[in-house]
Amino acid sequence: MTKKAKLNQKIAFSVLRFGAALVASIVVIILLQITINGYSVLSIEFLTEMPRNRMTEGGIYPAILGTIYLIIGSMSVALPLGILSAIYLNEYAQPGKTKWIIEMAIINLAGTPSVVFGLFGLAMFVKYLGYGASLLASALTLALMALPIIIRASQEALITVPEEYRYASLALGVTKWQTIRQVVLPAAIPGMITGAILSVGRVAGETAPILLTGAAYFLPRLPDSVYSQFMALPYHLYVIATAGTNIAQTRPIQYGTALVLLAIVLSVNMIAVMIRRHYRRKLRN
Amino acid sequence: MKKGLYREKAIESLLYLSGVTAVVILFLICIFLFKDGIALFQKYPLIEFLTGTRWYPTSQPHQFGLLPLLFGSMIVTFGAIVLSVPLGIAVAIYISELAGAKEADVLKPLIEILAGIPSVVYGFFGLVVLVPLLQNMLDLPTGQNALAGSIMLGIMALPTIISISEDAISSVPRAIKEGSLALGSTEWQTIYKVTVPAALSGISAAAMLGIGRAIGETMTVMMVTGNTAVIPGFPDGLFAPVRTMTATIALEMGEVPQGSEHFYALFAIGSILFITTFITNIIAEYIKRKYRFNLGAGQ
Image 1 (tube, rainbow over the protein chains, first blue to last red):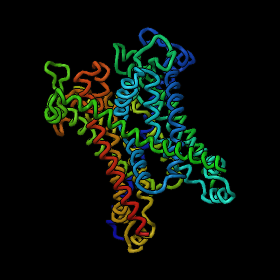
Image 2 (cartoon, one colour):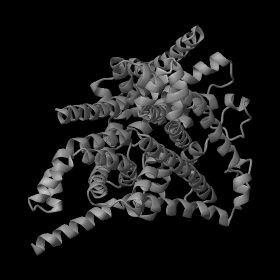
Image 3 (cartoon, chains in turn green, cyan):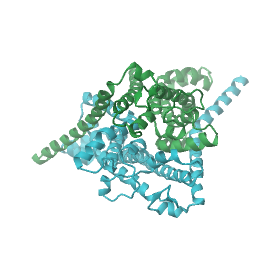
Image 4 (cartoon, one colour):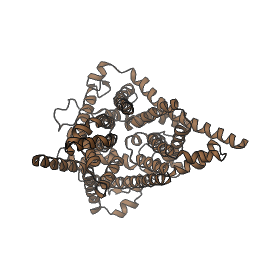
């Protein structure tokens, strides 16, 4: 080992270490900036009151509620569909053209830009099916975006169930579907929940699709049906951060909204990671 | 028994239907997007859309030239990739080859957090922190420019690039690395002459997916790039405001009457975007599969 090679290694390793430190500090800076500045406006009133005085005062309750509605709406479509789809791919589909086409479709859905989903939701749900700009149209659009995440996570969960379970059950004369329902699914459920929760994080944070399919700038009332327009946290943050005349004055509210959104998305993700870890440890023992 | 068999068949058909939904959805996206996109060309020539240098959707007569938006997307994406690919690969190498278990346990969750932050929060952070910083540091008329978009998109593409590159690097067989070390190479020589080249296809798949993510990102670029539809120069265009294809759709869709030429023009842009990301996804997947096969054959 020459001296020069040693020196090169030293320099290279320092560069790599610097890169890792840089990325770590970017994450920490973003989190701290939003937490520190947003924390001061957080209060029960901020979370439970309507915006007042052209959104320069008051709370963000309707936006929080709208986001919760979107999560419930999109999950109730995407979750069953995604899990059934994963069961088909893993337990029934034979390797071949059909399976390949489905998997390529899932990969492409996962990589399609959110604004394109928004355009599709606008053309199909808002216009063609006549739902109008509404909670329903937005929730369905978001459901389509969540679908590939749920399918992938459910497939991963199904793969980890040992083949022996299936053989043992089938050998006892139990039918295929009963085997899946009573043996495979219970073992795979934690993994599927992880996927579902991860997709909730995605749904809660998406802006572009709902902007095109039903999110409103401001509404004096809460949505009263699935055909109502609605306010939602990510769009609300965009609106108060970029539009209006008092952008600088409402900065604390902007930080507060960003913090609430970030807290929802990250805590949801953290729960998913914890479930996954717990489950993996259990599998290993 | 017969009733049970019937039930099994019914369930299998239901599962099959759910299985093909992804294909159906993708198919529907194509139809609805292209149908409204193509509607533009009944009134506005395709060639002018593709080669036009002016995007003046509201002037009379309308001008729907794609080029300023296309180049806007390209320059922001280019900047993002230049920043994030080397950095992402460096972090991936660090995590898989240098970091101890404890360090990796800190870095990995941090990167997962980076992947979880919503794009509108990135946009907000860019707007209130990065934009004023760039304006003051580089003494520019505005900090809302392509560079701000590139930096934010670069950060957002990092998790994709890091996690896929890391997978590729850590799946390089140990025997190859040990062979190199046994021949007297330093650890670093082994990394950059053996490990990284062996993982190169996985790393390029990561870069492709990063590009796809950056081209398709909407909210962040809309909030930090200033949204001026002019063809950017190179490289000075990096320091000027630009408008991307995604931002154009999100900004203008709210104000156009449904069924107008402008409305269809936005769908035409959406179609171009969809085709672009479709191609990058396919290429990334192709590279990924090929490299999996290669490693399998080597073992």
